[in-house]
Amino acid sequence: MRVAAAQSGPIQKADSRQAVVRRMIDLLDRAKAQRCDLVVFTELALTTFFPRWHMTDPAEVDACFEREMPSAATRPLFERAREHGIAFHLGYAELTPEGRRFNTAILVDRGGRTIGKYRKVHLPGHAEFDPARSFQHLEKRYFEPGDLGFPVWRAMGGILGMCICNDRRWPETWRVLGLQGVEMVVLGYNTPSVNSQKPGEGPQQRMFQHRLSLQAGAYQNSTWVVAAAKCGVEDGHPLMGGSMIVNPDGEVVAEAATLDDELVVADCDLDATAFGKQTVFDFARHRRVEHYGRITGQTGVILPPEE
Image (cartoon, rainbow, N blue to C red; front, side, top):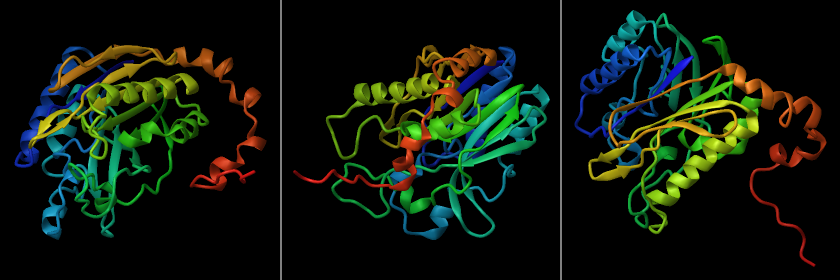
């Protein structure tokens, strides 16, 4: 299938949902012109990356979240995708009827029906204002850890999985998806261009880590990966780009060239995942689970005894 990573340029705090959705519809129209089957929008695609802001007013926080999907503001996106017959992935901040808050992504089929939902498991950052940081990263303040695990779905003639941003840095994410035969992992991310706790870690090193995570995940699980960035300068805060599509051999086959709204397109043959799954990464033949108990048996590091 032909897939597009729909990179988003910056969304300022003052930008309306309607203005953002119009930009997304424009990307959908461009994807239709390029005969795309699936468009992957980014993490928190409808708002600025609000976890950088320390908000204490509940109404201000609630304004960043979606109570339903589609909502009045996003319904035109669903309708245009259905008209074009294009499936899509969308990341947003979810406020449930019970008052729970998640960093969420959904998978929508060609008919505009939501067929899959994922909630971000690996939340980075911190929960309270930290004056030592050059900027805040308050995902642990605004979201709960995801409660849906790492499911996959049969869609678009293959097996698709989702993760979000920081999840891509954790090998456990990829392996749980790989153990379900995943053939394509789609994800969005909002990654600051600099580390708020380590000023020397700038865009070059952050991009290296980003590529490393995607390429290793793709290769070690013989899966396609489609990663869409939100990037550019949001209210003075730079986010890195690097939207890309990676093949099951871990090779980057398409990559963004800008820090603005951009489509990154590639033809992805899901059958290309079969060779790796049947040889080097034939899990049934080669995995040795009797030695992996520590992975799920503990969280923090336990050092060996001293001599």
